[in-house]
Length: 136
Image (cartoon, one colour):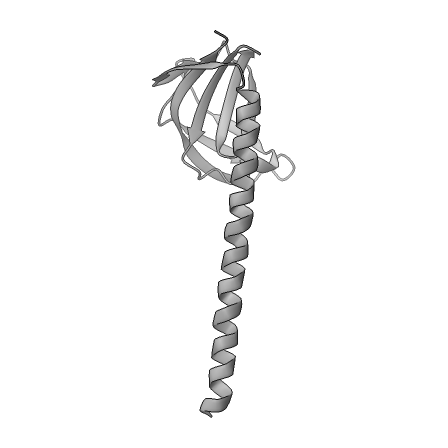
């Protein structure tokens, strides 16, 4: 019985370890791609001090890179905020829904992601601090 059980146990433990390693490697690759994309989009811009809120009315264009959202008014004026990572689907291009009664987006405000086709919510997360990047 032990002769049969031991090889099966070793095989299952080994395959589980290999699949966990593959998942980590693909996550590391995606994180490296996201970092390269952020570096490319923010190249030549200088970050300012982190702020708690951002005027929403001035920044209309948004770009998502991983768990980071970039709001831009012009090519040389961009706000960056990192979410807490609970918005599943930011990478897939789902719609972002925010509710603001003051015309500002602030740290800790909740945003939801909704699938555009089925209109089913896919997650929610909060904004981090907002850092303004400008051309020097």
